[in-house]
Length: 225
Image 1 (spheres, rainbow, N blue to C red):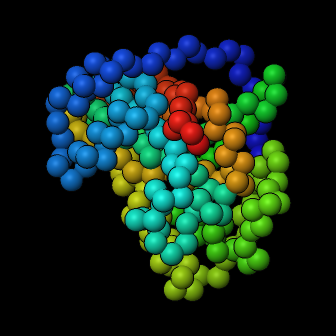
Image 2: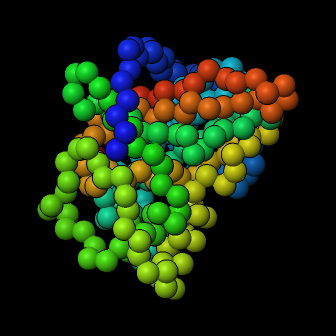
């Protein structure tokens, strides 16, 4: 696991309730509206340069049942992060999803970053031989390699479920919204989410190849989790 060191942390502004209401007033696709609206209201968010990114970790096993009715990533120590990308600008934006990281404090001097899993890696981790013993979680640093599971029908089913529930596209058209799940393997160490940040470093404007300032969203865990 790669460790990274930050010389300083930006002070992240938290949006006020009336800002959320204003953001939602524009409206977007009816099929996405309810879920994105709920995440924008209850999740952590950051807004600048016409883009709003909201993130909400799923910390209740019941949240996974609809998307994963048989095998839950949460039971395997993986947290699903519901993210919403809301583009209020007049330009198409491209997000490098593979560069998104979950960062958290290890000690006073450094932070550790965890890369989001692909749908195939989610299936590998959940169905890997031997499974997991929830009482024997590995403490940080988290492991890098993920053992490969047999790609039988159960693997294919879970991989497809993770793919469908994931972020469907890396391009956000003007005045539109893209939402879905990102998956992070915390080996069951969900307490690491306290004070964690979702780091989105690579967002570009497709016309003119201009880059936006990075996003670093301080996560808020749901009360009582």
